[in-house]
Image (spheres, rainbow, N blue to C red):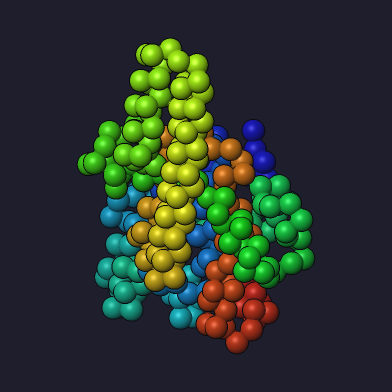
Length: 271
């Protein structure tokens, strides 16, 4: 089933087949896929990569960010071309069909992605939102760090389950063995409170780490934090961040790179 050209099952387009998908496979469409394409339009983050030709069989797309120019030569031809093209090749390698298909659908996706945003926060004609609204929506992001924490605990364990949670669980097990109803009720309440606090603290830590990575333009860290969304889990729709949220946030964050947002939008060519 296609929704505005999307494949909700694995986030892949017909042009991506049989090539491997560079983007993660979430429960719905690969929203970060659209976010990265839209980021290319609004401002210049020179270290964000959607696909690396060394690890992907996607047909490459060379981007000249200084002139907003798309070079349609394959990587092998670029290697024999000018040094400027080699620099562009090392900075960005995207697939042309991916850009055209997914970039062109951004405008059509507005009504689709708005249902995942916070209610009464965005409108179709709204290009900027308040910082508080942006951060409130971005905090809906659900991330896992199984790779980074895999050396410390089994991959299937929850990263927020710390020593305090273990102690609370042990106390609950002791109360269950003693079969003391009052002690069991108290242990269950304490265990629930500890779990709630631990989850909230872990989510806040991940959120702060994501903000630091974004503000420092640490593309590798941003991609690690965000691309794990939906992996090894089945997140709810409200766990996804719609592209319009990322566009608004990064537009406000990097708006000093442009004389005006209208001028930047005028450079957009959907083909």
